[in-house]
Amino acid sequence: MRSDYLIESEELRDILRRDDLLIIDTRDADVYERGHIPGAVNISDIFYYLCRSDNGGYPAMVAYFEKLFAQAGLRSENQVVVYEDAMDNGYGQSCRGWFLLNYLGHKNTRVLHGGFRAWRARNMPVSTEKLKRAPSDFKAQVDPSMILTTEEMLQAVDDPSQVIVDVRDYAEWIGANSSPYGYDFCPRKGRIPGALWLEWYRLMRHKQGIPWYKSTEEILGVLEQLEITTDTKVCLYCFKGARASNTMLALRSAGIKNVRNYFMSWNEWSRNFSLPVEEGYPER
Image 1 (spheres, rainbow, N blue to C red):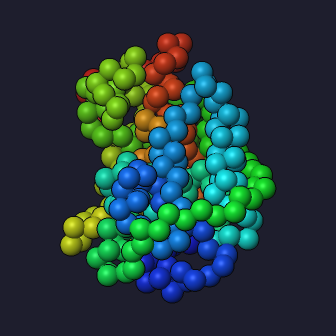
Image 2 (spheres, rainbow, N blue to C red):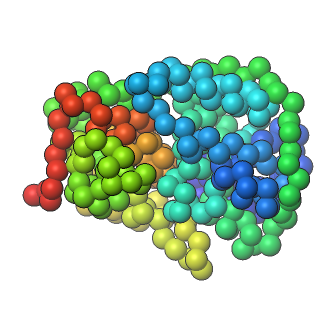
């Protein structure tokens, strides 16, 4: 798939020496230290940070990552490339980075298609040098069109003009498991009422052990089964916004422009007992 949101290994190799390039490795620090793309900085909190209303919600998240990206030396002129190990074994963490940077206003951001695994499969260079960049004065310019608040998601439940899509794994979808963090990590199991199920894996395929996004035509074919078209207003959620970010990138790449991410997702929804929940096997 060719996309304004993705970069292939060969293209990244060709621009490695550019002064305006910032590469972000979202993997754990110990994995990063064993070998990473030359010039990459490590920001694993892109994956681990949990955004909930009881820790300040979206405003606190913006402040946290504004500081973190400034420490990493992010500047407005930077081309940013975000990567993880493979795009199906990190719960979409590189795409979570893509989402966060776009939400904070840095639109010149792409995800390495296929992840570090694709980079290594093509015998690209690897470094163990721990890079430290000069800090910047990065300031967020929040794009509210990227995200859904809990109130907006609740409104979408009763709004037939919007389609809620749950992209979690099957056990979470039917309410057999609360989260990837454990069976009882969340106080309630189930799903947001009226949500359609599109397991995030369905938009990717494996080739030679590496996960890639399907073609635009294949993605649109999957969406057609859910009666989602390029004009549909799509509201995505998962557990903490990572898998939803992976799906959002795929949908945007396929031409679905009116798509937003309920970033706090089930981790937030399940903790507010005033919000409705469906559980068990859905009728459709």
